Amino acid sequence: MEAYLSRSGPCPVDILLNVAVPDQEPASVAVCLLLPHSTRWRRLCFISSYDMSSNLAPFYRVSAPNLEYISLRTGELIEEASSSSRIYPNCPSPVPQILNDVPSLTFVRLAGAALWKLQPPMHGITILDLEGSPSMYMTAQQLQSFLATTPSLVSLSLSRYNIVAQQEHLEVIPMQPMCSLRYMRICHEETRAGDLVSLMGLPVIETFKLQDLDSFNCRVLPSVHSITFIACSLSHIELRDITHSFPSLLSLTMDQSVQVLYTVLGFPAGEMLPWPSLEMITIYDLIPINVDMFCNMIHSRCHVKSKLKTVRLNRRSRTVLRSKGRLEWLCALVHVESYDLDEVWPPNMQCYDPDDSWNN
Image 1 (cartoon, rainbow, N blue to C red):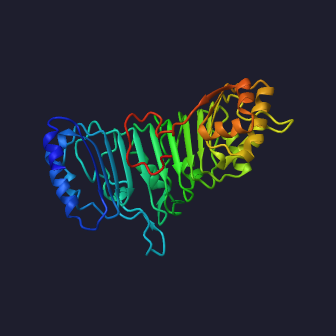
Image 2 (cartoon, rainbow, N blue to C red):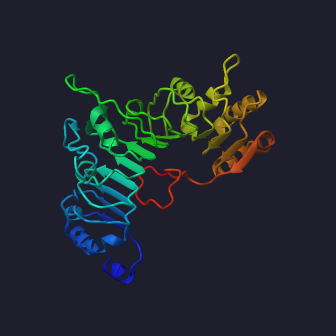
Image 3 (cartoon, rainbow, N blue to C red):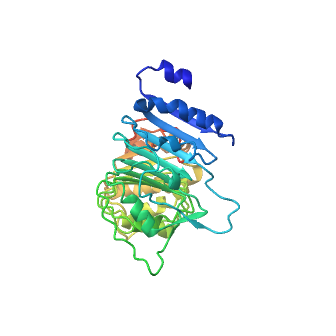
C-alpha cells in the first residue's frame, strides 16, 4: 500500500482493505498510511469480521473533499452467544462518527457494527446500503429518524432488518415523503419487507428489487414501473396482490423462484389483465418443467393484444426454449433479446462495487 500511495502521485485513490485476522495492527498501519492522502481518496472499502471502530478513530476529523464511495463492513453480523435480540444503539448518531468534510460523498454502505459505530455525514448521499443483523432490532421511530438524515437519497438497499412496533408510551414520528427515492432493494428472508415499506413515504419510487424474501406485502404504489424477483419464496396470493400494488408496471425481471407468476400473468378467463401496461419481461434460468407455463402466459397476453413487446432471455433460458422447439415460436410473437448480464444495483451505478453481498 505504501508503494501504491507514493507512486500514484496526485491520482485519485481507491482502496479495499480486508482484515481477516484478529490482529488489529495491520489495519492500524494501513489507516496511518492513508491519512496523509485524504484529499485524494475517491473510494474506500473496509471489510473485517472484527470491530474496527478503534482503528478508524483517526478518521473522525478527516476532510476528504473528493471521497465519493465508502463501504464499511465491520464486526460480527450475528452474535451467536446472544440469547435475545438487542436494540441498535446510537441509530441514528446525533453527529457523524467518522469523517468531517465529505462534500462529494454519494455512496455509503454500513454493515454489522459499522451501522451504529461508524456513521459518516449522510446529508448529501444519494445511495445508501444498510445491512443489519437478525440478532438485533430497530424501532420504527429509529428507522424513520435514520432515513430522515438522507434527504437527497435516490437508491436505498435494506437487508437483515427486524423492525418492531413502538412502545405504547412513544409515538411514531410521521415520516416526511422521500421525494427523491427512486430505487429500492430489500433482501434476506428475515427482513419484514412490508413493514419497512409501510414506514416510508414513497411518492416517486420507480423500481423495486426483492431478493431472498419469504413474504412481501405493500400498499398501492402507482409510480412503480419496474420490479425484480430473485430467489423469493412468495405465495400465489402474495404475487397476485403485488400485481394490484404496482398497477403501472412496465418491466418485470424474474428467476424461477416465482414461477407461479406465469399463472398469475396468464390470467384465467373472466379476470382482468394483470399489469396491462407491461412491456418487457426478463427471464433468468428458465427450466424445462416451466416452459409450457411460460409459453401459455406469453400466448395469452399476446392473444388479447397486451402491450408486451420484448422478452429478454439469458443463455440458459434460450437453450431450454430451443431444446423444446419454442424459441422460434416465441420470436414470432414478441421481440426476443439475449440478455446475459447480471443486473447491477442500483441501476445507475457508474463504478464497480467490490462489496455488494447481494450481487447475482
